[in-house]
Image 1 (cartoon, rainbow, N blue to C red):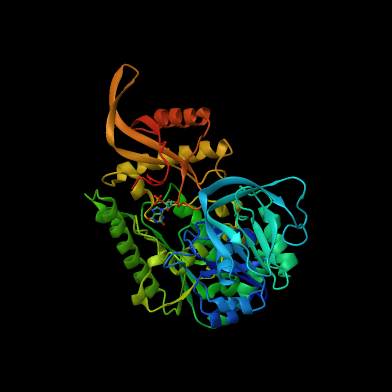
Image 2: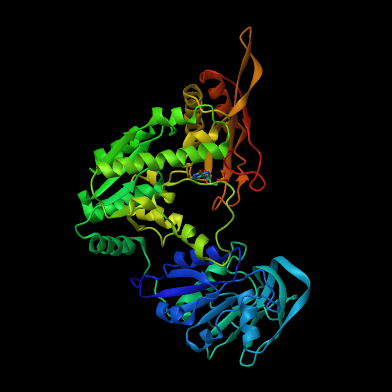
Length: 518
Ligand code: XMP
Protein backbone atom coordinates (compact mmCIF):
# COMPACT_ATOMS: atom_id res chain seq x y z
CA UNK A 1 0.00 0.00 0.00
CA UNK A 2 0.94 3.60 -0.38
CA UNK A 3 4.11 4.68 1.19
CA UNK A 4 3.35 7.67 3.33
CA UNK A 5 6.49 9.33 2.10
CA UNK A 6 4.57 11.37 -0.37
CA UNK A 7 2.27 13.88 1.19
CA UNK A 8 0.22 14.59 -1.87
CA UNK A 9 -1.23 11.49 -3.40
CA UNK A 10 -3.93 10.87 -5.91
CA UNK A 11 -5.83 7.61 -5.91
CA UNK A 12 -6.88 6.00 -9.18
CA UNK A 13 -9.58 3.38 -8.84
CA UNK A 14 -9.35 0.89 -11.68
CA UNK A 15 -12.60 -0.27 -13.26
CA UNK A 16 -10.73 -2.29 -15.86
CA UNK A 17 -9.96 0.28 -18.54
CA UNK A 18 -7.18 -0.45 -20.97
CA UNK A 19 -6.07 3.12 -20.29
CA UNK A 20 -5.75 3.00 -16.49
CA UNK A 21 -1.95 2.87 -16.53
CA UNK A 22 -1.96 5.75 -18.95
CA UNK A 23 -3.98 7.87 -16.50
CA UNK A 24 -1.34 7.17 -13.86
CA UNK A 25 1.48 8.06 -16.20
CA UNK A 26 -0.19 11.31 -17.19
CA UNK A 27 -0.70 12.23 -13.53
CA UNK A 28 2.92 11.41 -12.70
CA UNK A 29 4.05 13.54 -15.64
CA UNK A 30 2.52 16.54 -13.88
CA UNK A 31 4.75 15.63 -10.92
CA UNK A 32 1.92 14.47 -8.74
CA UNK A 33 2.29 11.07 -7.10
CA UNK A 34 -0.54 8.61 -7.72
CA UNK A 35 -1.31 4.94 -7.32
CA UNK A 36 -3.70 2.57 -9.03
CA UNK A 37 -5.85 0.30 -6.88
CA UNK A 38 -8.75 -2.00 -7.71
CA UNK A 39 -12.19 -0.38 -7.85
CA UNK A 40 -13.32 -2.23 -4.72
CA UNK A 41 -10.57 -0.96 -2.44
CA UNK A 42 -11.93 -0.92 1.09
CA UNK A 43 -12.98 2.40 2.52
CA UNK A 44 -10.57 2.19 5.47
CA UNK A 45 -7.75 1.74 3.01
CA UNK A 46 -8.87 4.70 0.98
CA UNK A 47 -9.01 6.76 4.15
CA UNK A 48 -5.55 5.61 5.18
CA UNK A 49 -4.25 6.53 1.74
CA UNK A 50 -5.56 10.01 2.35
CA UNK A 51 -5.82 11.10 -1.27
CA UNK A 52 -5.92 14.71 -2.41
CA UNK A 53 -8.14 13.56 -5.25
CA UNK A 54 -9.68 10.40 -6.65
CA UNK A 55 -9.88 9.45 -10.31
CA UNK A 56 -12.32 6.76 -11.37
CA UNK A 57 -11.04 5.05 -14.51
CA UNK A 58 -13.11 3.94 -17.43
CA UNK A 59 -13.97 0.30 -17.92
CA UNK A 60 -15.54 -2.11 -20.37
CA UNK A 61 -18.70 -2.72 -18.33
CA UNK A 62 -22.08 -1.10 -18.47
CA UNK A 63 -23.25 0.27 -15.13
CA UNK A 64 -26.43 -1.82 -15.43
CA UNK A 65 -24.57 -5.11 -15.96
CA UNK A 66 -25.40 -7.71 -13.35
CA UNK A 67 -21.80 -7.84 -12.19
CA UNK A 68 -20.85 -4.24 -12.95
CA UNK A 69 -17.87 -3.19 -10.83
CA UNK A 70 -18.97 -0.81 -8.08
CA UNK A 71 -16.77 1.17 -5.72
CA UNK A 72 -17.75 1.79 -2.12
CA UNK A 73 -20.27 4.57 -2.43
CA UNK A 74 -19.09 6.15 0.79
CA UNK A 75 -16.16 7.61 -1.19
CA UNK A 76 -18.64 10.33 -2.05
CA UNK A 77 -18.69 11.43 1.57
CA UNK A 78 -14.94 11.79 1.89
CA UNK A 79 -15.02 15.42 0.79
CA UNK A 80 -12.26 14.66 -1.69
CA UNK A 81 -12.53 15.88 -5.30
CA UNK A 82 -13.46 13.10 -7.73
CA UNK A 83 -12.99 12.88 -11.48
CA UNK A 84 -14.94 10.08 -13.16
CA UNK A 85 -13.74 9.16 -16.61
CA UNK A 86 -16.18 7.41 -18.97
CA UNK A 87 -17.45 4.43 -16.95
CA UNK A 88 -16.29 6.36 -13.86
CA UNK A 89 -18.63 9.18 -14.84
CA UNK A 90 -21.48 6.76 -15.39
CA UNK A 91 -20.81 5.25 -11.99
CA UNK A 92 -21.09 8.71 -10.40
CA UNK A 93 -24.31 9.37 -12.29
CA UNK A 94 -25.79 6.07 -11.21
CA UNK A 95 -24.86 6.58 -7.55
CA UNK A 96 -26.40 10.02 -7.43
CA UNK A 97 -29.63 8.91 -9.07
CA UNK A 98 -29.10 10.17 -12.62
CA UNK A 99 -29.92 8.12 -15.69
CA UNK A 100 -27.41 6.32 -17.87
CA UNK A 101 -28.71 5.08 -21.20
CA UNK A 102 -27.38 2.96 -23.99
CA UNK A 103 -26.37 5.10 -26.96
CA UNK A 104 -27.89 4.03 -30.25
CA UNK A 105 -24.36 3.53 -31.55
CA UNK A 106 -21.17 2.90 -29.75
CA UNK A 107 -19.19 6.12 -30.02
CA UNK A 108 -15.61 5.30 -30.74
CA UNK A 109 -12.95 7.63 -32.03
CA UNK A 110 -12.48 11.35 -32.31
CA UNK A 111 -15.38 13.62 -31.41
CA UNK A 112 -15.76 17.36 -31.13
CA UNK A 113 -17.11 18.78 -27.90
CA UNK A 114 -18.28 22.28 -27.19
CA UNK A 115 -17.22 23.73 -23.87
CA UNK A 116 -19.96 25.50 -21.97
CA UNK A 117 -18.03 26.32 -18.83
CA UNK A 118 -14.32 27.08 -18.87
CA UNK A 119 -13.93 27.96 -15.23
CA UNK A 120 -12.26 25.02 -13.54
CA UNK A 121 -11.89 21.66 -15.30
CA UNK A 122 -11.71 23.31 -18.70
CA UNK A 123 -9.86 26.41 -17.57
CA UNK A 124 -7.76 27.85 -20.39
CA UNK A 125 -9.56 25.92 -23.14
CA UNK A 126 -11.20 27.76 -26.00
CA UNK A 127 -14.96 27.97 -25.57
CA UNK A 128 -15.70 29.13 -29.08
CA UNK A 129 -13.85 26.42 -31.01
CA UNK A 130 -14.84 22.82 -30.61
CA UNK A 131 -12.34 20.65 -28.77
CA UNK A 132 -11.21 17.33 -30.19
CA UNK A 133 -11.50 14.49 -27.71
CA UNK A 134 -11.30 10.70 -27.80
CA UNK A 135 -14.51 8.83 -27.07
CA UNK A 136 -14.90 5.15 -26.46
CA UNK A 137 -18.21 4.30 -24.86
CA UNK A 138 -21.46 2.46 -25.37
CA UNK A 139 -23.50 4.21 -22.67
CA UNK A 140 -24.08 7.88 -22.10
CA UNK A 141 -25.63 10.20 -19.55
CA UNK A 142 -29.32 10.76 -20.29
CA UNK A 143 -30.18 12.69 -17.17
CA UNK A 144 -27.63 14.19 -14.84
CA UNK A 145 -28.12 13.67 -11.14
CA UNK A 146 -29.42 16.52 -9.08
CA UNK A 147 -26.82 19.16 -8.32
CA UNK A 148 -24.85 18.49 -11.50
CA UNK A 149 -24.54 20.79 -14.47
CA UNK A 150 -23.19 20.09 -17.96
CA UNK A 151 -19.76 21.54 -18.68
CA UNK A 152 -19.53 20.37 -22.28
CA UNK A 153 -21.52 18.52 -24.89
CA UNK A 154 -21.11 16.82 -28.23
CA UNK A 155 -23.65 15.95 -30.87
CA UNK A 156 -23.72 12.34 -29.69
CA UNK A 157 -23.37 12.98 -25.95
CA UNK A 158 -25.23 16.07 -24.79
CA UNK A 159 -23.48 15.64 -21.46
CA UNK A 160 -19.86 15.11 -22.46
CA UNK A 161 -18.71 16.54 -19.13
CA UNK A 162 -20.50 17.45 -15.91
CA UNK A 163 -19.85 18.67 -12.41
CA UNK A 164 -21.34 19.14 -9.00
CA UNK A 165 -19.10 22.03 -8.13
CA UNK A 166 -20.18 22.32 -4.52
CA UNK A 167 -18.97 18.76 -3.84
CA UNK A 168 -16.13 18.99 -6.37
CA UNK A 169 -17.31 15.93 -8.29
CA UNK A 170 -16.51 15.95 -12.00
CA UNK A 171 -17.19 13.56 -14.83
CA UNK A 172 -16.00 13.37 -18.41
CA UNK A 173 -17.39 11.05 -21.03
CA UNK A 174 -14.19 11.15 -23.08
CA UNK A 175 -10.64 10.05 -22.29
CA UNK A 176 -8.35 12.96 -21.34
CA UNK A 177 -5.46 10.51 -20.75
CA UNK A 178 -4.98 9.44 -24.37
CA UNK A 179 -2.90 11.31 -26.93
CA UNK A 180 -5.96 11.66 -29.20
CA UNK A 181 -7.34 14.23 -26.76
CA UNK A 182 -4.90 17.08 -27.44
CA UNK A 183 -5.98 19.18 -24.45
CA UNK A 184 -6.13 16.12 -22.16
CA UNK A 185 -2.99 17.02 -20.20
CA UNK A 186 -4.37 20.48 -19.47
CA UNK A 187 -7.69 19.06 -18.32
CA UNK A 188 -5.94 16.63 -15.96
CA UNK A 189 -3.70 19.41 -14.67
CA UNK A 190 -6.75 21.56 -14.01
CA UNK A 191 -8.25 18.75 -11.99
CA UNK A 192 -5.05 18.10 -10.04
CA UNK A 193 -3.89 21.64 -9.42
CA UNK A 194 -6.98 23.86 -9.54
CA UNK A 195 -9.53 21.45 -8.13
CA UNK A 196 -7.54 19.13 -5.84
CA UNK A 197 -4.94 21.73 -4.85
CA UNK A 198 -2.00 19.42 -5.54
CA UNK A 199 1.49 20.76 -6.00
CA UNK A 200 4.00 19.41 -8.50
CA UNK A 201 6.38 17.94 -5.93
CA UNK A 202 6.95 14.38 -7.22
CA UNK A 203 10.36 14.57 -8.87
CA UNK A 204 12.98 11.95 -9.38
CA UNK A 205 15.56 13.88 -7.39
CA UNK A 206 13.21 13.98 -4.41
CA UNK A 207 12.51 10.28 -4.97
CA UNK A 208 16.23 9.50 -4.91
CA UNK A 209 16.79 11.52 -1.74
CA UNK A 210 13.88 9.96 0.11
CA UNK A 211 14.60 6.44 -1.09
CA UNK A 212 18.24 6.56 -0.06
CA UNK A 213 17.23 7.67 3.42
CA UNK A 214 14.60 4.95 3.64
CA UNK A 215 17.00 2.26 2.40
CA UNK A 216 19.63 3.23 4.97
CA UNK A 217 17.11 2.99 7.79
CA UNK A 218 15.73 -0.29 6.56
CA UNK A 219 19.00 -2.10 5.91
CA UNK A 220 20.83 -0.89 9.01
CA UNK A 221 23.88 -3.09 9.53
CA UNK A 222 22.55 -5.97 7.45
CA UNK A 223 23.69 -6.98 3.98
CA UNK A 224 21.91 -6.98 0.63
CA UNK A 225 22.44 -9.21 -2.40
CA UNK A 226 21.45 -8.06 -5.87
CA UNK A 227 21.48 -9.83 -9.23
CA UNK A 228 22.87 -7.47 -11.82
CA UNK A 229 22.22 -8.21 -15.48
CA UNK A 230 23.26 -4.96 -17.09
CA UNK A 231 19.62 -4.20 -17.96
CA UNK A 232 18.19 -0.83 -16.97
CA UNK A 233 16.09 -1.94 -14.01
CA UNK A 234 18.68 -4.01 -12.20
CA UNK A 235 21.40 -1.44 -12.93
CA UNK A 236 19.39 1.44 -11.49
CA UNK A 237 18.41 -0.67 -8.47
CA UNK A 238 22.04 -1.58 -7.81
CA UNK A 239 23.36 1.96 -8.15
CA UNK A 240 20.62 3.36 -5.93
CA UNK A 241 21.39 0.81 -3.25
CA UNK A 242 25.09 1.34 -3.63
CA UNK A 243 24.61 5.05 -3.12
CA UNK A 244 22.60 4.28 0.02
CA UNK A 245 24.54 1.49 1.66
CA UNK A 246 27.89 1.19 -0.17
CA UNK A 247 29.78 -2.00 0.59
CA UNK A 248 26.86 -3.55 2.42
CA UNK A 249 25.58 -4.35 -1.07
CA UNK A 250 27.03 -7.28 -3.00
CA UNK A 251 26.03 -7.82 -6.61
CA UNK A 252 26.23 -10.96 -8.67
CA UNK A 253 26.52 -11.02 -12.43
CA UNK A 254 25.88 -14.46 -13.89
CA UNK A 255 27.46 -14.89 -17.30
CA UNK A 256 25.24 -17.52 -18.86
CA UNK A 257 27.09 -17.36 -22.17
CA UNK A 258 23.95 -15.93 -23.78
CA UNK A 259 24.72 -12.25 -23.43
CA UNK A 260 25.63 -9.90 -26.23
CA UNK A 261 29.23 -9.58 -27.36
CA UNK A 262 31.41 -7.95 -24.72
CA UNK A 263 28.45 -7.35 -22.40
CA UNK A 264 29.75 -9.07 -19.27
CA UNK A 265 33.04 -7.19 -19.56
CA UNK A 266 31.28 -3.84 -20.03
CA UNK A 267 29.07 -4.41 -17.00
CA UNK A 268 32.13 -5.29 -14.89
CA UNK A 269 34.01 -2.24 -16.08
CA UNK A 270 31.17 0.14 -15.31
CA UNK A 271 29.92 -1.17 -11.99
CA UNK A 272 33.09 -2.57 -10.48
CA UNK A 273 35.61 -0.36 -12.23
CA UNK A 274 33.83 2.98 -12.28
CA UNK A 275 31.38 2.73 -9.37
CA UNK A 276 33.60 0.54 -7.22
CA UNK A 277 30.79 -1.85 -6.35
CA UNK A 278 31.29 -5.21 -4.75
CA UNK A 279 30.39 -7.07 -7.93
CA UNK A 280 31.09 -10.74 -8.54
CA UNK A 281 31.16 -12.21 -12.00
CA UNK A 282 30.24 -15.87 -12.13
CA UNK A 283 31.22 -17.23 -15.50
CA UNK A 284 29.05 -20.28 -16.05
CA UNK A 285 28.77 -20.00 -19.81
CA UNK A 286 30.17 -23.49 -20.42
CA UNK A 287 27.78 -24.98 -17.92
CA UNK A 288 24.69 -23.30 -19.42
CA UNK A 289 25.70 -24.42 -22.89
CA UNK A 290 26.15 -27.96 -21.66
CA UNK A 291 22.65 -27.93 -20.13
CA UNK A 292 21.14 -26.59 -23.36
CA UNK A 293 22.72 -29.24 -25.55
CA UNK A 294 20.19 -30.84 -27.89
CA UNK A 295 17.29 -28.72 -26.54
CA UNK A 296 15.10 -27.16 -29.22
CA UNK A 297 11.84 -26.37 -27.46
CA UNK A 298 11.57 -22.65 -26.46
CA UNK A 299 9.86 -23.23 -23.13
CA UNK A 300 12.30 -25.99 -22.26
CA UNK A 301 15.18 -23.61 -22.95
CA UNK A 302 13.66 -20.96 -20.70
CA UNK A 303 13.08 -23.48 -17.90
CA UNK A 304 16.64 -24.73 -18.04
CA UNK A 305 18.09 -21.22 -18.06
CA UNK A 306 15.82 -20.08 -15.22
CA UNK A 307 16.60 -23.14 -13.12
CA UNK A 308 20.34 -22.92 -13.67
CA UNK A 309 20.35 -19.20 -12.98
CA UNK A 310 18.76 -19.75 -9.61
CA UNK A 311 21.18 -22.55 -8.78
CA UNK A 312 24.26 -20.55 -9.73
CA UNK A 313 22.96 -17.40 -8.02
CA UNK A 314 22.15 -19.20 -4.79
CA UNK A 315 25.50 -20.89 -4.65
CA UNK A 316 27.36 -17.62 -5.11
CA UNK A 317 25.14 -15.79 -2.64
CA UNK A 318 25.91 -18.42 0.01
CA UNK A 319 29.61 -18.10 -0.66
CA UNK A 320 29.38 -14.35 -0.11
CA UNK A 321 28.10 -14.85 3.42
CA UNK A 322 24.96 -14.03 5.29
CA UNK A 323 22.64 -11.43 3.79
CA UNK A 324 19.19 -10.42 4.99
CA UNK A 325 17.82 -8.86 1.81
CA UNK A 326 17.55 -9.59 -1.88
CA UNK A 327 17.20 -6.51 -4.10
CA UNK A 328 15.15 -6.65 -7.29
CA UNK A 329 14.36 -4.15 -10.03
CA UNK A 330 10.57 -4.68 -9.96
CA UNK A 331 8.72 -1.78 -11.58
CA UNK A 332 5.23 -0.43 -10.96
CA UNK A 333 3.61 -2.07 -14.02
CA UNK A 334 4.66 -5.50 -12.62
CA UNK A 335 3.06 -4.59 -9.31
CA UNK A 336 -0.18 -3.39 -10.90
CA UNK A 337 -0.38 -6.46 -13.12
CA UNK A 338 -0.70 -8.62 -10.06
CA UNK A 339 -3.10 -6.52 -7.98
CA UNK A 340 -5.23 -4.66 -10.42
CA UNK A 341 -8.72 -5.18 -11.73
CA UNK A 342 -7.88 -7.82 -14.26
CA UNK A 343 -5.55 -9.82 -12.08
CA UNK A 344 -2.40 -11.35 -13.42
CA UNK A 345 -2.46 -11.46 -17.18
CA UNK A 346 -2.28 -14.83 -18.82
CA UNK A 347 1.20 -16.18 -19.22
CA UNK A 348 2.05 -16.53 -22.86
CA UNK A 349 5.74 -17.10 -22.34
CA UNK A 350 7.25 -17.83 -18.99
CA UNK A 351 9.60 -14.94 -18.33
CA UNK A 352 12.48 -15.94 -16.17
CA UNK A 353 13.96 -12.87 -14.69
CA UNK A 354 15.80 -12.33 -11.50
CA UNK A 355 12.12 -11.77 -10.68
CA UNK A 356 11.37 -15.36 -9.83
CA UNK A 357 14.16 -15.70 -7.33
CA UNK A 358 14.35 -18.21 -4.63
CA UNK A 359 12.09 -18.43 -1.65
CA UNK A 360 14.46 -21.03 -0.29
CA UNK A 361 17.10 -18.39 0.26
CA UNK A 362 14.87 -16.96 2.98
CA UNK A 363 15.80 -13.45 1.98
CA UNK A 364 13.51 -10.48 2.40
CA UNK A 365 12.81 -8.51 -0.74
CA UNK A 366 13.88 -4.95 -1.35
CA UNK A 367 12.32 -3.40 -4.44
CA UNK A 368 13.23 0.29 -4.47
CA UNK A 369 11.71 0.95 -7.90
CA UNK A 370 8.36 -0.70 -7.29
CA UNK A 371 6.51 2.62 -7.37
CA UNK A 372 8.04 3.74 -10.65
CA UNK A 373 7.16 3.48 -14.30
CA UNK A 374 9.95 2.53 -16.66
CA UNK A 375 10.60 6.08 -17.82
CA UNK A 376 10.76 7.22 -14.19
CA UNK A 377 13.26 4.43 -13.46
CA UNK A 378 15.36 5.75 -16.33
CA UNK A 379 15.24 9.27 -14.91
CA UNK A 380 16.41 7.91 -11.58
CA UNK A 381 19.35 6.31 -13.42
CA UNK A 382 20.23 9.68 -14.91
CA UNK A 383 19.94 11.33 -11.49
CA UNK A 384 22.46 8.78 -10.26
CA UNK A 385 24.85 9.61 -13.12
CA UNK A 386 24.47 6.31 -14.91
CA UNK A 387 25.66 6.78 -18.50
CA UNK A 388 22.86 7.69 -20.88
CA UNK A 389 23.61 4.67 -23.11
CA UNK A 390 23.01 2.39 -20.15
CA UNK A 391 19.85 4.14 -19.01
CA UNK A 392 18.29 4.22 -22.46
CA UNK A 393 19.06 0.59 -23.23
CA UNK A 394 16.46 -1.39 -25.08
CA UNK A 395 14.94 -4.33 -23.18
CA UNK A 396 16.83 -7.60 -23.47
CA UNK A 397 15.24 -10.91 -22.46
CA UNK A 398 16.55 -12.73 -19.38
CA UNK A 399 17.29 -15.95 -21.34
CA UNK A 400 19.30 -13.78 -23.70
CA UNK A 401 20.32 -14.93 -27.13
CA UNK A 402 18.92 -18.43 -26.46
CA UNK A 403 15.43 -17.23 -27.43
CA UNK A 404 16.81 -15.63 -30.58
CA UNK A 405 18.53 -18.77 -31.79
CA UNK A 406 15.73 -20.93 -33.09
CA UNK A 407 16.42 -24.58 -32.53
CA UNK A 408 19.49 -25.83 -30.74
CA UNK A 409 21.85 -23.34 -29.09
CA UNK A 410 25.46 -24.11 -29.94
CA UNK A 411 28.65 -22.13 -29.44
CA UNK A 412 29.00 -21.64 -33.19
CA UNK A 413 25.43 -20.37 -33.57
CA UNK A 414 25.83 -17.98 -30.62
CA UNK A 415 28.87 -16.46 -32.34
CA UNK A 416 27.02 -16.02 -35.64
CA UNK A 417 24.14 -14.30 -33.89
CA UNK A 418 26.43 -12.10 -31.79
CA UNK A 419 28.17 -10.83 -34.92
CA UNK A 420 24.86 -10.06 -36.64
CA UNK A 421 23.49 -8.43 -33.46
CA UNK A 422 26.44 -6.04 -33.27
CA UNK A 423 25.80 -4.92 -36.85
CA UNK A 424 22.05 -4.43 -36.37
CA UNK A 425 22.64 -2.26 -33.32
CA UNK A 426 25.44 -0.26 -34.92
CA UNK A 427 23.35 0.55 -37.97
CA UNK A 428 20.25 1.37 -35.93
CA UNK A 429 22.32 3.69 -33.74
CA UNK A 430 23.99 5.29 -36.76
CA UNK A 431 20.56 6.06 -38.21
CA UNK A 432 19.51 7.72 -34.94
CA UNK A 433 16.83 5.10 -34.34
CA UNK A 434 18.07 3.32 -31.21
CA UNK A 435 16.02 5.33 -28.74
CA UNK A 436 13.10 5.83 -31.10
CA UNK A 437 12.27 2.16 -31.52
CA UNK A 438 11.34 -0.21 -28.71
CA UNK A 439 13.71 -3.02 -29.65
CA UNK A 440 15.99 -3.90 -32.55
CA UNK A 441 17.76 -7.20 -32.86
CA UNK A 442 18.78 -10.17 -34.99
CA UNK A 443 17.34 -13.68 -34.88
CA UNK A 444 19.12 -16.76 -36.21
CA UNK A 445 16.74 -19.08 -38.02
CA UNK A 446 17.01 -22.86 -38.06
CA UNK A 447 17.02 -23.10 -41.85
CA UNK A 448 19.66 -22.78 -44.49
CA UNK A 449 19.09 -21.41 -47.95
CA UNK A 450 20.98 -21.39 -51.22
CA UNK A 451 23.00 -18.39 -52.31
CA UNK A 452 25.83 -17.55 -54.62
CA UNK A 453 29.08 -15.89 -53.67
CA UNK A 454 31.66 -15.27 -56.38
CA UNK A 455 31.35 -18.34 -58.58
CA UNK A 456 30.30 -20.58 -55.80
CA UNK A 457 27.01 -21.84 -54.64
CA UNK A 458 26.52 -21.41 -50.89
CA UNK A 459 24.16 -23.12 -48.51
CA UNK A 460 24.06 -21.05 -45.35
CA UNK A 461 22.03 -19.56 -42.48
CA UNK A 462 19.30 -16.92 -42.52
CA UNK A 463 19.21 -13.95 -40.16
CA UNK A 464 15.88 -12.25 -39.48
CA UNK A 465 16.00 -8.62 -38.40
CA UNK A 466 13.29 -7.56 -35.95
CA UNK A 467 12.68 -3.88 -35.17
CA UNK A 468 9.49 -2.92 -33.33
CA UNK A 469 7.71 0.14 -32.02
CA UNK A 470 5.85 -0.23 -28.77
CA UNK A 471 4.81 1.62 -25.63
CA UNK A 472 4.85 -1.21 -23.13
CA UNK A 473 5.62 -4.46 -25.02
CA UNK A 474 2.01 -5.59 -24.60
CA UNK A 475 1.36 -4.65 -28.20
CA UNK A 476 3.90 -3.77 -30.86
CA UNK A 477 4.14 -2.92 -34.51
CA UNK A 478 7.06 -3.56 -36.85
CA UNK A 479 9.05 -0.39 -37.41
CA UNK A 480 8.96 1.24 -40.80
CA UNK A 481 12.69 1.90 -40.76
CA UNK A 482 14.13 3.41 -43.96
CA UNK A 483 15.07 0.98 -46.77
CA UNK A 484 18.61 2.38 -46.70
CA UNK A 485 19.03 1.25 -43.10
CA UNK A 486 17.73 -2.21 -44.01
CA UNK A 487 20.09 -2.27 -46.94
CA UNK A 488 23.19 -1.48 -44.92
CA UNK A 489 22.23 -3.97 -42.21
CA UNK A 490 21.72 -6.66 -44.82
CA UNK A 491 24.85 -6.03 -46.86
CA UNK A 492 27.09 -5.73 -43.81
CA UNK A 493 25.77 -8.96 -42.30
CA UNK A 494 26.03 -10.94 -45.51
CA UNK A 495 29.48 -9.59 -46.31
CA UNK A 496 31.03 -9.97 -42.93
CA UNK A 497 29.24 -12.61 -40.88
CA UNK A 498 30.59 -15.96 -41.91
CA UNK A 499 27.84 -18.54 -42.26
CA UNK A 500 25.03 -16.15 -43.29
CA UNK A 501 23.93 -15.66 -46.88
CA UNK A 502 20.43 -14.19 -46.44
CA UNK A 503 18.79 -11.50 -44.32
CA UNK A 504 15.03 -10.99 -44.00
CA UNK A 505 13.00 -8.27 -42.24
CA UNK A 506 10.17 -9.28 -39.91
CA UNK A 507 6.93 -7.46 -40.76
CA UNK A 508 4.64 -8.94 -38.12
CA UNK A 509 2.93 -7.03 -35.35
CA UNK A 510 2.03 -8.16 -31.86
CA UNK A 511 -0.56 -9.57 -31.55
CA UNK A 512 -0.81 -12.03 -33.16
CA UNK A 513 2.99 -12.44 -33.29
CA UNK A 514 5.19 -11.74 -30.30
CA UNK A 515 8.24 -9.49 -30.19
CA UNK A 516 10.77 -12.28 -29.64
CA UNK A 517 10.61 -15.24 -31.95
CA UNK A 518 10.63 -17.76 -29.13
P1 XMP B 1 7.25 -11.02 -26.28
O1 XMP B 1 8.21 -11.83 -27.08
O2 XMP B 1 6.49 -11.84 -25.27
O3 XMP B 1 8.14 -10.03 -25.44
O4 XMP B 1 6.35 -10.16 -27.12
C1 XMP B 1 7.68 -8.93 -24.72
C2 XMP B 1 8.87 -8.27 -24.06
O5 XMP B 1 9.44 -9.12 -23.07
C3 XMP B 1 10.78 -9.45 -23.40
N1 XMP B 1 10.93 -10.87 -23.12
C4 XMP B 1 11.51 -11.36 -22.03
N2 XMP B 1 12.09 -10.74 -20.99
N3 XMP B 1 12.59 -12.82 -20.05
C5 XMP B 1 12.64 -11.49 -20.01
O6 XMP B 1 13.21 -10.95 -19.08
C6 XMP B 1 12.03 -13.53 -21.06
O7 XMP B 1 12.01 -14.74 -21.05
C7 XMP B 1 11.47 -12.74 -22.11
N4 XMP B 1 10.83 -13.07 -23.24
C8 XMP B 1 10.49 -11.90 -23.85
C9 XMP B 1 10.94 -9.11 -24.87
O8 XMP B 1 12.29 -8.82 -25.20
C10 XMP B 1 10.01 -7.96 -25.03
O9 XMP B 1 10.59 -6.74 -24.62
